[in-house]
Length: 82
Image (cartoon, rainbow, N blue to C red; front, side):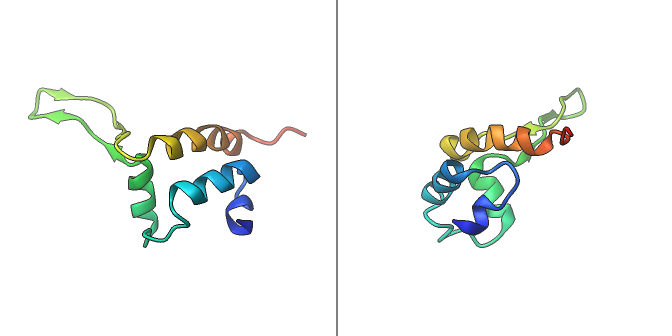
């Protein structure tokens, strides 16, 4: 709990939700697995040579985890105002 909540933008409620949704990171072995489990991995849509769209997240993983991480990601990416 202490390590997860030390990440910028992550509060206590978000940390608890992350730990609960990942079952305490019991089955997560590396960061690639965590990103994929949350559905935040990048997928490119291509169709031969005619159709190519910009890369987007896959959204195939845990919806609750992705939802909880949205605002902390925005808060962490904002420049600090003094």
